[in-house]
Length: 446
Image (cartoon, rainbow, N blue to C red; front, side, top):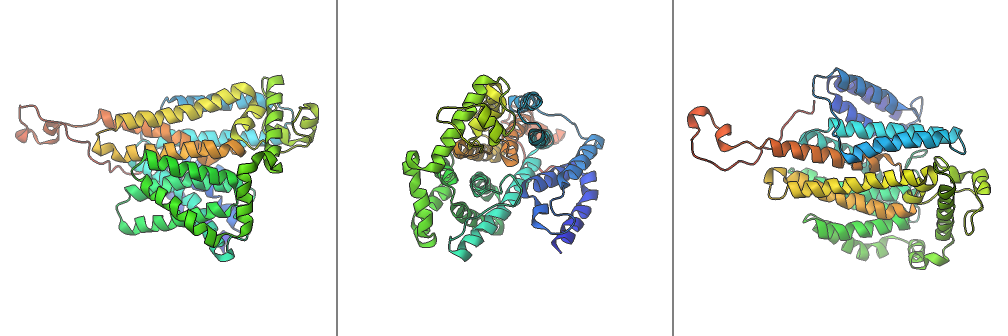
């Protein structure tokens, strides 16, 4: 039955995607992040649906009469350069079959990010993209929160199988990033019913994050609460939720959860954390010996670990467990420099947006979104320091969204009308008049 519902939904969306390419982009994001094909049984289970939606979106955008351009933002330029460099590192990789598969997936994600930057060129479209990300991931937040309540926290919350967030730790970090977007939508949504619904989703998502048993996600959550309280007026609710968790969690989660979280303070004695340190040392060793690194996920292969013996490093293949060392071991110091540049310029984008929207009521929404993007990016940087999620779709889309938002803000600055230009000619006066705030954009999604 689920299979049939998904098929009908996709067929029903097809005509609208061809008519309005932005709808195709939203469907592309939804399939990439939510992986609805992982939630069904039958012929569509595990199918590569996003390739068909991506092609349809590209063709529809090519045929559309709207202006087509990708903002020449450093974030997008460096992402393109990283794709090129990872193509080089894949060619010279220590292992090719699995590496090429991961390169293919990363390149497709980068294309999606570039289309987000190019097509989300108005307030309504950016809002739609934020909603698409939020809805796609909120499904797992609500589902995970319900699981915690039903099981009393005795079981861990996992993501969809065979996806980038299948692991409990990966799902936890993705939900932390989602929480910042949910808070932004709560603040900017006018409908009271929707706001209440978002608050309920945020509460469930918090429970789901706790229920993943992820220490990295917990640290990222703490960082998000602290940053939200400092960077945004809307952060008061996040701070209040954090305080509430301190009192609620002891009544929900079992002793096993507290035992795991207590190991954060004794990381040097924890075998799991020390295994991460071993992976970092091996990744660094590979990068120092090979300009191109080992290729995607190279240190997960036993023969690679054997070929690069490292004092205090790995003795058996395993994941890098850090977005920074993951990129370093995969693509060398050049790849890491490009990757850090993408993140750094994304934060620069948000700073520039905040500067250019100060004292601009018409761009208040952009100011609020920039603050929440900052919160999400920094929280992910902290949580990702111990998790292998460097190439996660939603993370890269968030970075690309900062470029799209800056472009829209600059367009808004250049289009602020004056009172005289807003009035009919017979009502216009010769005297100078102050400029009006730009009217709220009500552009069609097409």
